[in-house]
Image (cartoon, rainbow, N blue to C red; front, side, top):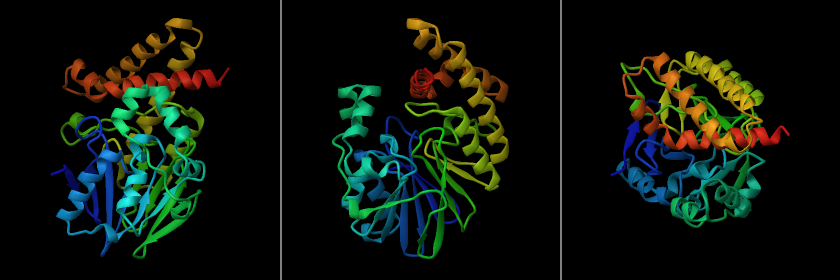
Length: 314
């Protein structure tokens, strides 16, 4: 059985099975006899999601919405396969991302640029397009209703220009995709949760990132759900940490902007230092090697994202 964490208000996190356990969460939202899924993981996430739904007595026909926070493939790679499985579902996506769901060629090419051809196929399989008539574009302040439960979309760029967060009217909680950072459960300590931002390719931009963090904080949610990984609380304090560390990443990038061929490795070392310094500040008792192991994939992605951002400044 897939790993499932059940929270209040009919919210559950299903481990997508992507890369390693507890890296990538698909959120299931149940209201009465209707359901929505927030983010999809990859094609390989379909079986664990269906299994988790069966355990809860839910049939595929009861899913009304498949909701994408953004179209990076660890969040949306399985969207086409999900839509095949859920015949009554509508796919929601930011207007900037909709065309990539009907024609995923450019999205796939961008992923190949980051990971390479072989790794991309291994991680994501064949990306299935979604019929245009099953897609609902969700700009800022758009809303949908799940069995009467309102879900409002917030335009939240900074991690990606096609990113939305979703405010759940019933709980007051927010599903934030990647724009409110990364908080892996292996780092939890004494009931506290560690968090860092993600500056992954290819649209990291510090100024809109700060605005998106502030927008989420203005809603004063008691909890935020991250794709990497699920529910966090003490939201205002975590927002302050994210602001500080977005600046730290940007400062690192600008400091190394003109480092030439040495830039990628200098950025990589700098990202590792930011994470380890923050872990010590936070009071982690884990060895440095374990912290870097937990965030190993993110070190590489944050490094590449800073490089893309620096290139965009030229």
